[in-house]
Image: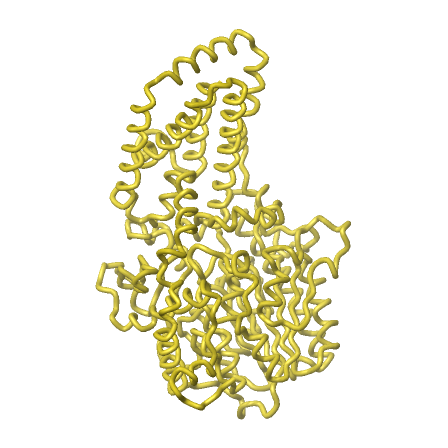
Length: 630
């Protein structure tokens, strides 16, 4: 049975390569690095089975290993299809989060994926055939009598070639970390696990001795930011009383929906009106790939971790976040999430951010309504409108909307535009347009209710897309743009990350368009700028009203400035090792002016991983100053 499962695992690797969308024959024959990685895992399997003498135990382990491998490869294929990036170990460990998006998983699955579950039926069929069992026992006897030393030496050589060849054999346009997954997910997670275990010993971000240097850098940055000139498009003057703040984080809302027409009809008329009457950030790019990271970067103004999701790994920290700061300034703070409180550790993070009140799906929908994993946006915004009437003013209220979550077809929404049966790319785009319109209609009714209640005139709204929708038509276009460029895949992801961001305060702000590059880390500083409040020392973004060019740093270790695409971010050196001119994509030296900006990513990483967030008081104590700031 060991021999049979060996060949079954070979089939699983074959299916895995095919499922990633790469043909197996002709010019698309598997890459040598991929083949070497398969050999490494197959040899590891043999070496584990080699010393086991009890045949029943050996058979059970062989089948169990093969089943686990098939399920693991299937899960990884789904993740790559969904996020276009490798999963991190914390996502795998928090399996409940995967279960909550099972409708998306079913939509992503293909008929051929059933091949990943072959080990069990093959094993069951062979167990019923006595002649096959006898021959397999003989094959096992031969297979497991091969010289152990030679197998082990071959294994070591294969591992060395695989590891050494990673940088030299991977396609130029693919990020090495992604190719490590594509070439061998088993060893990818082994490597990631070792990195996680070894981080306390080798990660410079975890060294407390760096804290005085970080505090000095944070203080210098804060003073520099305060001195910069800014222009806020007030209608008359800054508000005499502090406005209510309503934050709407919109799932997968691409900026391209503004101005999109189908048969002459606007897809998002309400958003278009808010964009024309408010402050539209035309170059707002999401720097993350998941809703939780978007929420984290917005509320804390800290940069995303490249290989972790703080909601899963850092949910017990006490962050100096926007709700906590505004709570100290007299705001009541409220959070509404259409999902379950357990999803992505949502309730723990709400407490970590300092929200005073929170509601989740369980308080809106009873357990019998299971057709959609989240509360539909129309019902969600009705609940929000009711709760806003009861909140003491001024308030900060934040809500996440979900109608536009993949696969863009929540049950119960109206379809403003006729569905398209084919081709697949247009089918998907039309489903997305209908999901956007369903959100837009719910938003229109919500704003009408706020206006009737008189709340809208006393409020400012911030609406921003959390991350891009991965539409196939866009994915192909941007990947073609960066074909042949080192780290082309993550750069294509960043180029495809332009999402909606609108500030709307009709009583205070006049219509304006700001073309400055910005991202989630810049939103909390922008809000505090509007309110005339100092930023906590740990907030690392800057207000979009500051008169200088912005930049974006993405979770996938790439970035952009007005003139350059940046790649190859090194955590140890806190710098981008590669740069390409915008437009020509010609390799150039990374701009020297980025050196101080990229240091902030290092400070962010150190603070999050150490769970240490210095205050102005700590700065004063270290410098001998008696100055104290909120």
